[in-house]
Image (cartoon, rainbow, N blue to C red; front, side, top):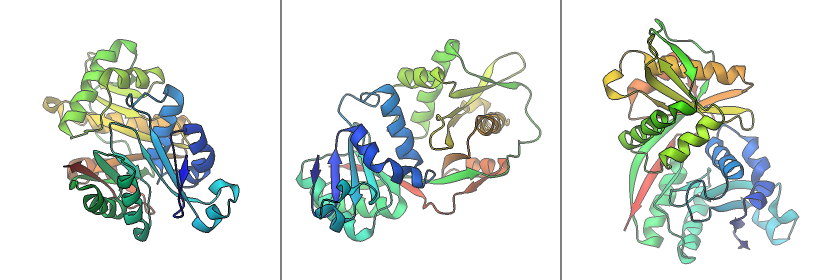
Length: 302
């Protein structure tokens, strides 16, 4: 664990990080949904769930309190970062005046990242700073919007068929559809499809929509319940089957089940470049999270 005068504390210890920053993450669970779900997966499934290299965490606490040694920054945390190699660095909202110093320190200490994700302004500022200090070229890969479910309004007409929770016999299908989803939609941070399917099926985290003859035609996933929230992801229909209402029906069923399972909030991200999905989710009852800036992901290349 290291600290500097700017108030950043870096660590590879998940328990230490959550002890110090957990209250901050839970204080705005919607805004911090990615950090909450990633750290929950690491806690439940082990530090190698995303890759062989150890995850890396950071928290920012008030510099004056940190220098005085008050409670090691606990209770004063105002921002965090995490990196699960080989995937991108993730940031919560950061003040612009501190981003250049953070990028400089990370570059000086030899850290390397394939990209960065975070609220749009923070991600853009860090990407520009990383270009200056690490000699990388940054390119915007995608922009997303976070939605929260208001009043659930199932789509009408409902397509023929029914929803069912995927089971172990669906492993191969779920893994293949996850891989197809990641490839088509440019999810460079995708996990191993078999490990992803295994983990989701273990807690009933994938719902399939199937036709009356029992043929699966779409899937909608959901994260575990964390800090009172569940996030719907991913939603996928194979290309030949799109435009028939299957994705909307599956999403509505997953959303209903999340509420029935005790979620205070049901969230999902949409790609701003996809007006079809944005329109679909709004018709079901999802609304943009008012206190959350849109999310952006940049790729880095030498």
